[in-house]
Image 1: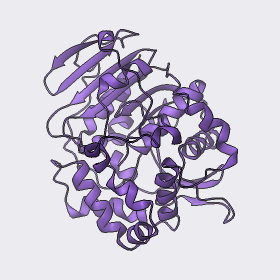
Image 2 (image 1 turned 180 degrees about the horizontal axis):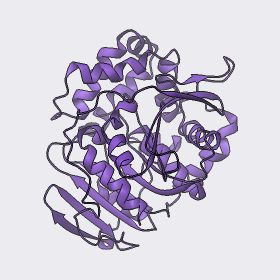
Image 3 (image 1 turned 135 degrees about the vertical axis):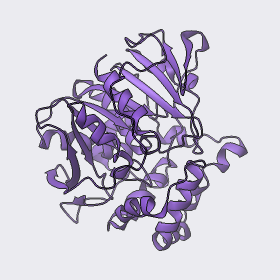
Length: 352
């Protein structure tokens, strides 16, 4: 569960609001996407009940940078590439219904396990188990390089949305367009040091728990139940069943999972050092770079995780931009809870 404390400017005069059934769209006047109304451009995707699909089929593995990455692939090999990135505590099954929708529309869909999840493994025992944001972004670029993908549409939520943001901001030549749940999530250690009002700090209880050795041990021992609690808090209206959760929870048995998660949250509070090789990237991110690639940001109307209002980050997108709020009790895990809406956003932004 993740919405980092970010550097985002608010400008209420630079947006307009548009409504349609089930979707609220906000199109930035900095550059609207071609659809100047709330209805997605795409109308030919089939309706799908979340949870219709339960398996990706055989996974693939590829050496990429510091990792041997496990990933799912769907769609034609020569289709326009789409890379979908999950967050914590989630996994590739967040896109279990999104992937076949996009594949049916002709896209080549790639869904990798992040470092510390599922079938992804470090190639060397000597590599630091860093969970800092720059490391995840470099991993994604290495994954694209290994697959010889020059440029892709990138979509994600939670840690995956931040990774997509970083690539779009620092390597725009590799990102054709982006879909980002909860908007602009680039932050820094300095931003993480800023105290928040008590009610806001309460929402970050798990981050402070992870800052202690007691919390590290507790997460290691109870990672299955702990992560299920996060799912329930982050998506309070999503009635997922045990089978749905257990398919994803298996990814948390990765031998590096706890180390990656704990480092991520300690790094944010400046309680853990980052890798020096990422210093330049983190310094650039600390400036709060704007994102110029075509972007659709999304939010569920029942997201129980900490998240900013769209007006707080709209100005960070200075290219073609639109925001969509998905109604109907949709929580933090938006791609899995509202797969058709997420797939529509990917296709619409790819056509921008």
